[in-house]
Length: 207
Image (cartoon, rainbow, N blue to C red; front, side, top):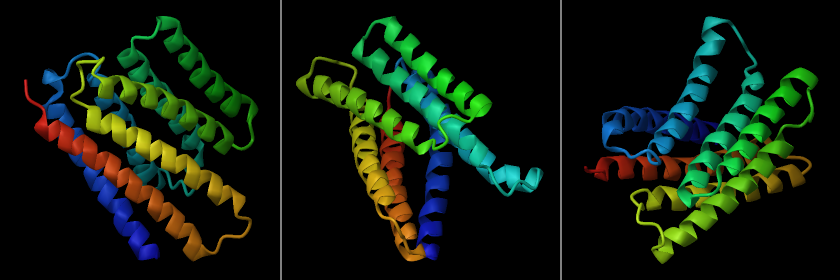
């Protein structure tokens, strides 16, 4: 199971790199709201790159200190994306900015909350709600900007199932190594689907 997990993991690295290169090539034809998708992927690529190179450059065996940055950055960028697509008042964007910044300050300065996974679940639930409302609008045809409809649907699907998997994982007291890798592999397969939706959408984009 470990080999399967590693295969999916490196597949995701390849997909992420492909999206970055293709997204950069198509960047000029993206409108202002659509560029936010590229920023989200660029941030994820940046975090994954740090996780890969820091152990080699600085002999860091533990890169868990990046986790709060990942949670806060992911939360801010994705919520900002859907807040703009929904046309919500700007103070909503200010609220998400304060929440993301407040979490980082609380975690890095005061180490609170001790378990960042709690914040991760809450942030994912907020993302699910915003992406769900956006999908409803796009399916009803209220929004004409639906070139990323497939991506929005996959974001909603990924974070919904991911939260469920996350909760189940923490409810099981004693996980064997094989069960642990099965759960991680399932989540990575869902992430592969999300990355493929980005790749397909960028390939299909035209002026």
